[in-house]
Amino acid sequence: YALAFLMAAYLYAQGSMSIGTAFLLYFYTILLVQPLNEISRQVEDFQRAGASIVRVQDLLAIRSALDDGPGQPFPGGPLPVEFDRVSFGYGDEELVVHDLSFRIEAGTVLGLLGRTGSGKTTITRLIFRLYDPAAGAVRLGGVDLHAVRLADLRRGVGLVTQDVQLFRASVRDNVTFFDHGIDDGRIWRALADLGLDEWIDGLPAGLDTMLGAGGSGLSAGEAQLLAFTRVFLKEPGLVILDEASSRLDPATERLLERAIDRLLRGRTAIVIAHRLATVQRADEIMIVDGGRIQEHGSRAKLVADPASRLSELLRTGLETVIAE
Image (cartoon, rainbow, N blue to C red):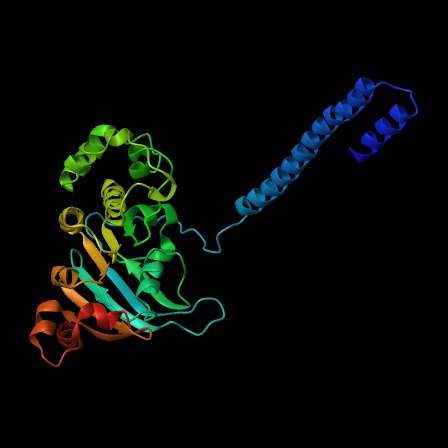
């Protein structure tokens, strides 16, 4: 721009061009620079796209370190869970689970309690086979997880975490994970069983209501309700529930409690409990600390025993103690 301006000013001062021609020289320079800037921006976009393609290819090239099993099937119905002398640590870190052995009978609801970092989430990750134990064996329905295909395991175990992942898509696609083989009738039956059909009817477009990425527009409790529907549609034999600890409005909390009751009915369940209501729902309680079982037994017996750790938690305030 400076060069064009100086050249136009010099030639005009020399009388070689009129003021109009001098202006056209400067104006044509502007017209020339604009497409060059646009080409530069497009080249930058192309470079970013190329780098993104490389990252996507790297991601697609990642292979799980877990070997898929030969495909031994699970028995039907609720699945018993067994940990046989299981130890585990993340990478080169020291063990976070130490020689853990316990059994949950089919159809039993286990309330899993413990302080932050005690190993509760690690236990559920081992059951879902996100990791393999360093020692020992985990069995579902009497079947070692190494003998089961990962796809069959993920269908047989329903996992609901506090952090629910929702996509920029319709409610229908979010509850079916984009599986168009699940018809609306089956979805509505699941919603009715969970007591959520009226709630879905209250959304602007029902199952066609579009959700934002991350579930924007829904509360934490409403996102949990959709997660329960996902699990219910899978009809798993084992449900792992990391209960939401965020504050809920009374209406959503009533729906959530009713959905939890229906989801756990007739299934084996492991519930990482954060609230007293969930502890009262469990048949058995297991308290872990430092990756070891501190207490495990019938909830009724532990509550009746004033010397038990559970009784102490209930006296001092469950929410306060397990968060320490």
